[in-house]
Length: 341
Ligand code: FES
Ligand SMILES: [Fe+2]
Image (cartoon, rainbow, N blue to C red; front, side):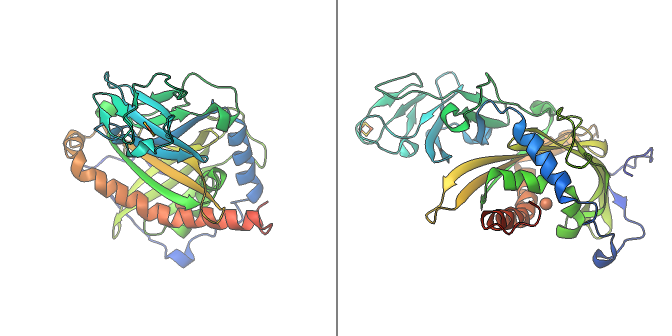
């Protein structure tokens, strides 16, 4: 187990002892019962989202261009108004349908590049804004017609370290699958050291929901994992990570013991709509919000512009494989061949 009173060294790294070869590690498939994963997924899907969808990183909204996204087939644009707040609405100009994602923002106003219609974020000429929310790391848009749930005033934002005192990095990728395939991947912690041996070793699932039943309270409906993040060679960072699904399209990993306690990795799955062949596409937006009480961490935060690409590269490597998992799950599900049904 990680962080069990082990004396903290000057560096956050440990030397892995008694390394077990990949093929000799304990097989996890007996523990990774399909009914447990399916049960956790079903309970996640039953939690309210209030129809909020993550559209991107807060950092990516600003400047002189709106952020344009398609969410469940709906074109959406997001930009910052004169006061710096986020505003959002349909991405189709109400005049003759120009793609507003290609229009510029001038002093907080979105100006359609076809005939100059100006949108300040308020309703205008049949264009009605969507509620938008900037949580400091990510931007969300509420689409009531898409979600069909009881709307909530604000999205279900995971608990995280104060962004001003953390290092944040956001990775985004797209896969051919539905949001549930991404969530199911994250609710299977047993695949970590088998499927991603380049990143994870010595993984043990210390606690998991019991069979298909579990708690309605997302904080109790958790998977606890003792794992070491591989840095280089035998150098590892052992931690305990707890996975929860606070809403239907989000899985959060909290570091609760070991290095970087309080840090989170959030995975958000946003449906984009079908591709040209009619297959569903889902965006994965992964936010790493890292905290540490180590002295050197302030320095690391100061070096955030340098570190962010490294964090994103690590996420991209994992998601290349995890999106293959999610895509495979969707393919098998959609053709009635998924064994974990
Ligand atoms: S299409 Fe936008 S102003 Fe005409
Ligand atoms: Fe994975």
